[in-house]
Image 1 (cartoon, rainbow, N blue to C red):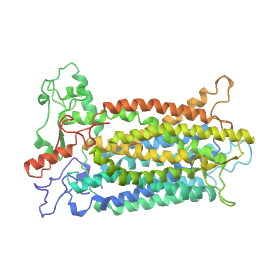
Image 2 (cartoon, rainbow, N blue to C red):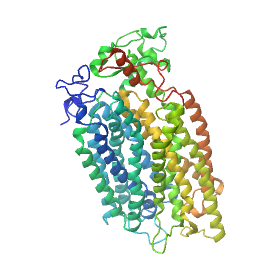
Image 3 (cartoon, rainbow, N blue to C red):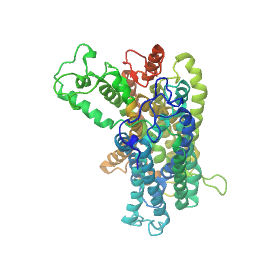
Image 4 (cartoon, rainbow, N blue to C red):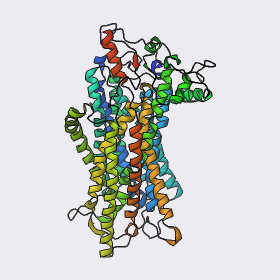
Length: 616
């Protein structure tokens, strides 16, 4: 049974003044509670003590996910006998679903179950999908026979294909409940009102990404090798076992976790603002923002919530707080509710500009891998380097970049920018997006070299090995890892940081939405280019025989798209105004009052410079 105090809105008394419980123990100042809904005693857990279990889970879970995703295109072509475009699109469509379902998971967590229980239930579904997938590649009746002839299209029965994809999409449903909640739970372990923990939180997302890519490094090396040389039964069985271990690790840390109190569905709150604003679209706004509807600060103190002061952005939404007409939730909203909606909506333009970069990153699991299968993969007389293992270099270079960035670059540049993060989140993201443009041009040049070697040696057949080392692809993989250290870390932290306190899960789901839409966009671009270039009797740029393709043209096309997207990104980030640092204002208020208060109040955008300095 789910504890009542996490099933209903906040039902515990907040910490007494000074942050002390009745027994004299220091309570957390951010209103977090334990699993039973009681105010959390700081010494009982949270911080890195709790995060060690959460990060431990993520290492094993990412090993499981990338153990499937990294080599999936090879399985689809070699075992299910799919062509270049269908196999690539099936990989990105599945990956897109994996990253889109967290929107549903975030809604369930915020509106119904809370982050912890949503995560636990989704983990069980995830584990079920992994187990079923392992069975489909292990049992003779569920896996297609090997391809011994040139015609392989009929070798896999509809049932075998159906059960395989069913298991993949069960996994996608499971990740929908785990992804938006586990990283948010990790960030929740740090009390923003405690200076030491607040400093630790600045590095949390860097080390969170470090754990993700440490797990993927194991998958891209050891697991991919096992899959290529010992079979997919063992190759999928190991990550299934790893996922089970990761869930146990997470559950062991349960007594240490701090929990944010569920505040209701953010979607409902935002729709209420939209409906109220539309109904009052003809109602003039008051000259003084203080005339807008807002609750007394004591009301927010009782619920342990932030009160957000009025800002001048997206003023149309202010009509929802205009005191006119009936007084219902669907006709009159508080300024705080309106400002929360503004904060979510104003991130949308930035979100839109991250779709193309996510589509670029998707190439490392599809076309880049397919290229690698055509090249000379020999390393000595008895070992062949798995094509999918090139993805390990994305991980390696990302890990190195994160450590150098966090330990060397940030302390150095902070002296000049006075920004705790060194540079702003949008600046960091922008560096990675610029790199994506160059990566795709480099990939095009490498492909032209591959095609020239094919022409020189006449290796035009689909099964011919192009006499050039697979490590010619290393630069594009390495640079992608460096770019990810800028784009993906900044993206995750930006959407979490800029989301209002009661909508952190929704903010985190923006990150996964970016990756999901990017994967679907990759499928759309690949299919469209393939179809368009086949018109008028042409063979097209993308064929099942990669030795007869023109992937260089495709890569140049993607590079141009990335360049156009970069222009839009620069415009959007120039216009973006960071949210006020609500915690900074609360700390200042506390200093002024010389007391610890359980309430939180946010200042307007013009009153305080945001924690990223307010510049894109």
